[in-house]
Picture 1 (tube, one colour):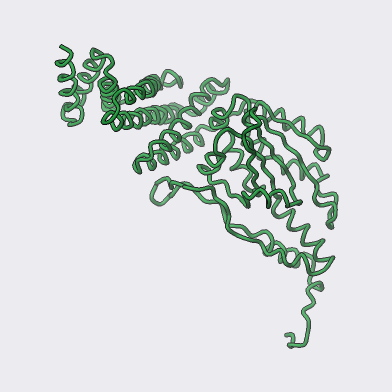
Picture 2 (tube, helix red, strand yellow; picture 1 turned 90 degrees about the horizontal axis):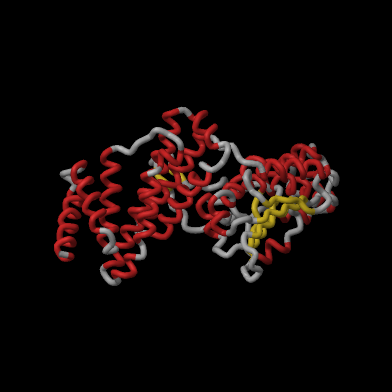
Length: 407
């Protein structure tokens, strides 16, 4: 035990112990937030990007030259900071919020001032240079989430060919392991999230002279290759997005509900054009494939219901404007009705599900003052399947009055 006049000889501790202390002080971050409450089986509606309001204690870097060199080495290896630069015509927050990608900083001056990045990922989603560039700092541990967030349908919505440019850096040159990033195994670990989670990106390249040329070629080819999805993971992800959209819908947030459901449905729609899709369906088995088909059906049916609610609310003040939403309702209902054909399965909607589709189609035609014969036909079909459904019976009467007014 030391006395008050004695000095604790930190440097006499074994190197492994000192490194563990550095890691606790410099590499402890909150765990990523989940958008799913497993206990309640509910999606949690996030409002803002998951900026980690947490500061690591870098004061130890100022102790002396030896500690600065050793602690910096741990800081850089334990965190593997990634700089992200994104140019897009839409709010970048829309990319980051659904997956709750943990962010160290979104402050441009902070992101620019830091010099310890292991990797820079630049994404150009729009050719128009007038759109601003968003600057982010994230951790490599969260690069998989980021890749999932910027892959798939959101990217397609922002531009036909988003361009990804990757640069590996070597901030270890002044540390105790200056050749750390020259090791190909470390480069492989650094780039692994792209190989797993950014498959299908058509424009993906490397720049700089740190990355091994052969590794760059192999990774770029893998990323550009067509992904082979996992059916169970796909179903799980679709269910979460469907539940999250319902949370928005129940909160009367039509915009975000529509965006969430549309992204999920479009993801499946695009996947059906891949060469790997028949293999996914075959490998999944009948039950799992039909479950995916039913969720795809429900996503489109929900989209129709959401747009229909907007139509009904708008019709009270502007009938002409309300009619403009009819096309979105018709499109969603058509995609729902063709779910099994599009996905290549034998799933069929239940009579109740079919009746609700018919009901929504009938309401849309009536509000838009469109095709009265179609409206009458489909609402009668719905009434035969669900004769005791109050909303359907009310719509039968509403269409009868509409027909009477037309003579």
